[in-house]
Image (tube, rainbow, N blue to C red; front, side, top):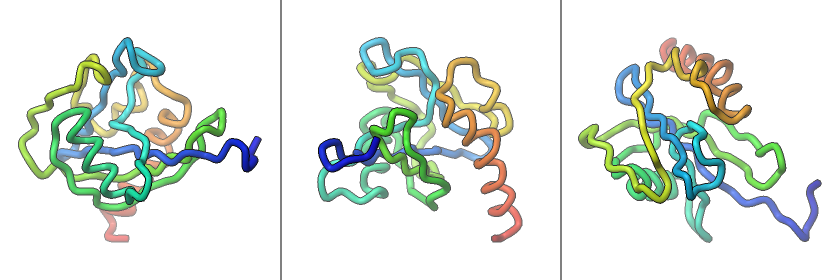
Length: 144
């Protein structure tokens, strides 16, 4: 599964928060896995930090300015193609989403506690939003 011939690529997952709302995007028909709902995601470029990749991808995919706050989780995709770096991000500009139609077919601001009930979602995303995210939010709310 892991070997030097097929090194894992690194990608970011930007959990964009605005109060109790989180931005979810539906992948465009020409993107990989069209119709799936997820956070803003994207591959990291050579020499790029996770934080820089987040700022770049959020601007490119949805036209939003964000500030990466803290890394919440790290996972490897089911087929072991990517290491995903999940980050909590604060919206620092207007909430006006401008989706790139080649990557995003729709978007919704969803209450944090309702995300895990969305219909078509990757298994690791569903796990994150039902188990990991609530625990990290409780820790943050308790000052940990």
